Amino acid sequence: MGVVILLVMAVGVAAMLTRKLPTAFALVLLAVVIAFLAGAPLTGKESVLDTVLQEGASALAATMIAILLGSWLGKLLEETGIAGTLVRKIVEFGGDRPVFVALGVLAVSALVGTVTGSAPAAMLAGLIGIPAMIAVGIPKVTAAGTVLMGIAVGVPFELPVWQFFSTALDLPIGTVRGFMVKLFPFALVAAVAYVLVESRRRGVEHTWPLKAARARPSRADRRRRLGDAPWYALLTPVVPLVLALGLDVAIIPSLLGGVAYALVTTTRPREMNRRLLRTLYGGFEVAAPPITLFVAIGILLAAVKLPGAVDALQPLVKAVSPQNTVLFVLVFTLLVPLCLFRGPLNVFGLGAGIAGVLVATGIYPAVAVLGMTASYNQVFGVSDPTSTQTVWSAQYAGVSPHQVMVRTLPYVWAVAFGGLCVTAFTEL
Image 1 (tube, helix red, strand yellow):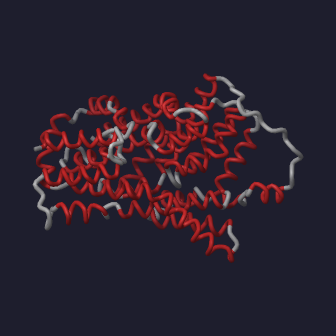
Image 2: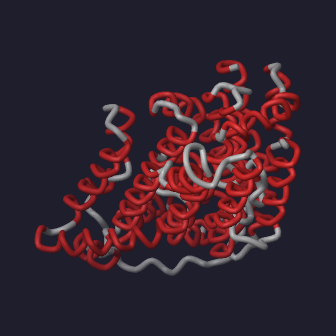
Image 3: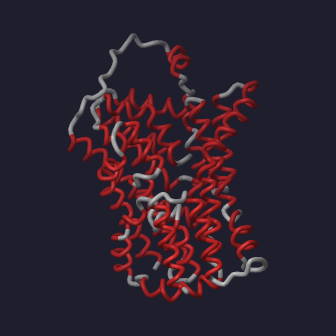
């Protein structure tokens, strides 16, 4: 029966790759089929309706709330001008020095990446950042990749991601946080290397000429014209991090603290109610696609953790899973491309189910599965031509997502290798 379940998973991957079914629908259908193959009854304990669909749909509820709050905070960064001001300040500081401008946009992208992910993060940093980089001579592909690599630097500190791994793998937040702190230096070094190497290797390409500078307006005039946020409001992306990482505050209160800080530092009291509701509703629109996906992932995780599924899959998965630390690193590093194109190791797809199988069958400790999936997530978030942030950044820069994939993949592959090394030599 384990072989049949693996074949069904392969069919599910094919359906997602060929876009015959949307990812969320494919995962739910896959979960129901796996549950029936595992011998689960229709109703009752460990059943299809009550366990897989009912309990699975709400299994990642804390992650969904964190995603919503992160999206809400992202909308506040957009509407209050905090994100735009950060990018403009960096561009002004960099002047006409291409590498400095790119490194500045990289830093802002990393800050935004700690708050929210996917296309909204790319838009917040890229709407101003990408044209600014191209204007000073950064090649288009490099400009798009810089935003994506920057977001990937922030992902290890993205609080909704912490919540997702904590809930999906049944790990304490502190354990997730500990590994993410170890993963961060690899992402940072790779991102800086990408900017330095790619901007110099490709040379300067002046595509969008800068407009002639006009007389410098007063600070008050600039703030009204450009929507600059006050300097103290620019600390908003750091507030949730300080609360969660420095003061050990829980994820949801930390995100709420960021929302409150952004609102208080940018909004007059009489306008707060309207801005709160407007940005919250906007956050719902941004959060709807990932929340739908997390409902489906929760259902799939519930299915693969059924006793029948665990018993059927354990001998097969154990037979092909490397136990030696060096072999673990080599095998899973070579498998990195399988997280691209919504492949079977994409943690926001079937990869979540595979991670659930590895934990449920006891093949690897949950913290080792965390290391593997978090390392793969660094690759998916930057180089996958089907991910929304990659598509948006590439198209906005005027290049194809596949061009961005080719340029960025070596760097994020190295990040995954580093994460897998840390995992193998500390957790296995």
